[in-house]
Length: 402
Image 1 (tube, helix red, strand yellow):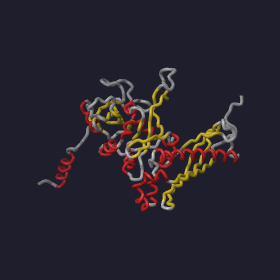
Image 2 (spheres, one colour):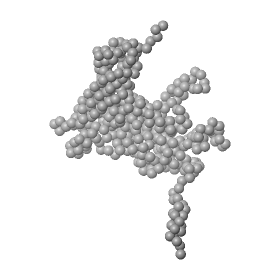
Image 3 (cartoon, helix red, strand yellow):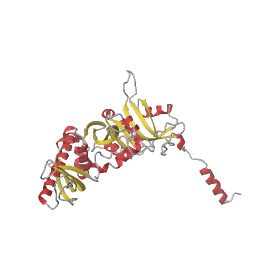
């Protein structure tokens, strides 16, 4: 007769004797970034539509070894491309030459070429949201460059390019140069009946400085955030620049800090830089005579970060002149952004329809099917109030007395 303790031990051994669906790490190709381009130079009758490039970390090399491990190139990444009629078709083609199974759980970012985005990204959204290995908090970006070049070029301080792109996104709240777009946000906006997608834009710029060869300052390509792409449905319909993107971020995210460069109050030829350290941003939907309206209120509190001219916080006349400059600048940028949203692209990527739906759900049901024709004519009033509170200890700019 088996004792109860022995029976418990036998059952535990049986339950722990195997793990179904286990994946050995030395059998996986850990994807750090993926790029999606259109197939170039297609021959007549070529059914391939996508070229998918993956950046895979080399486990032996990514530890920071300076020498070249035996049998390897010494590069911390391995990049490879494959073509296919669909995304999954292209990825499965990688199994014909990859010695490891492609594994997506560690992927940092999806980079989409703008030519692909103009044709539509519904296939990209569908594939990557169905993939159970992929995190929905994965970053997504568009680029005017080849996506395969963006993800496979070591451009920054990090060993892995995908990790460099990840950190570029994480710290963009300091610059506000682009929205922090994740796959989950894009899917939600695409499926929404109130909001259109907006996706951050990244590009190459020759800004890096060579540490080995003199005279090559600015000759090394770096990746930088530059504005955003505006979508209508799943198709890219336009772009906004960095200044407009800073205004767009106010509508869709919480801004940590922004800087504004203005002319000095008494000397327009000199410049003064203020940093917005705190703000209150509010969009109020209204219903007047059966028509939607919005009031945008932006209260900015700033410090002077750099003064190229005499300026004192004690001089109320100069302070008010500087505040008016901030107000005019921010109001003009917001109006330019709203004009692009309403008139140029007719794309509600600023979530105004969602705000109206939250406050007037019954009225929204009646107008949501015709929002495309209503949105361009909606009245939007912009109010900006700026306050300069401090940050200046010196009346005169820092200049040598020699």
